Length: 236
Image (cartoon, rainbow, N blue to C red; front, side, top):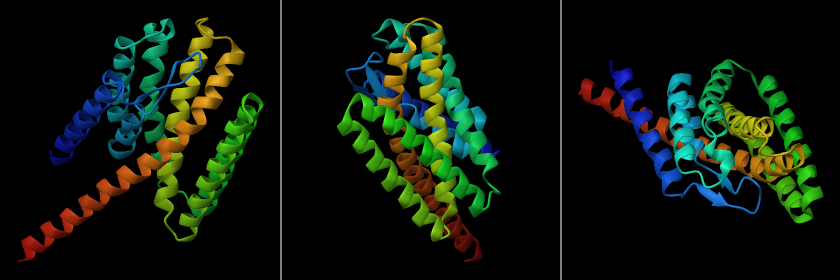
């Protein structure tokens, strides 16, 4: 019962944050691309999926998609197949990846980290073709991020790596599925979709990983601290 109440509370809080980010446009960052905005509003769905599983992630993702659809300023996001359907899978994929990595050892995590870093470099090269400064910034940010995660791995803090990878996959799910459906529905051609994916996708991945690690780590630290205090009170 206690776990069920916690899931409802967390889902409700994260859904409220998502709606605030979209409707107040706090989480929608205007950029001069065909998609019009980059976003951080998908991050609560990732956090919900990691903390409480795929169902909570799906519910928050649905809220994000519905809010995006209702608040759409361009035709592409007035289509529910673009605005809503892909967003259902953000928290679900993050949850599945995180669950799959629970028993993963350092070698598996290192291999996944290398693959993720390689993908980031490929996207950075595509960004370099569009704008040199952007490509260089993304290479630097990806390298610093990968180096920081490897440093944490050497310190045996593998949980951080798991959270970062799950968040990256959730963020990429949003970018790839939204743009794929937009191309399929005829709102974008492949070239502009690739440009949007590069210019939006990498920064969103990096921010998603940082915020997810920070928020989930803090919440779990608070939970462990409360559990210890509760245990001491019972003993007292």
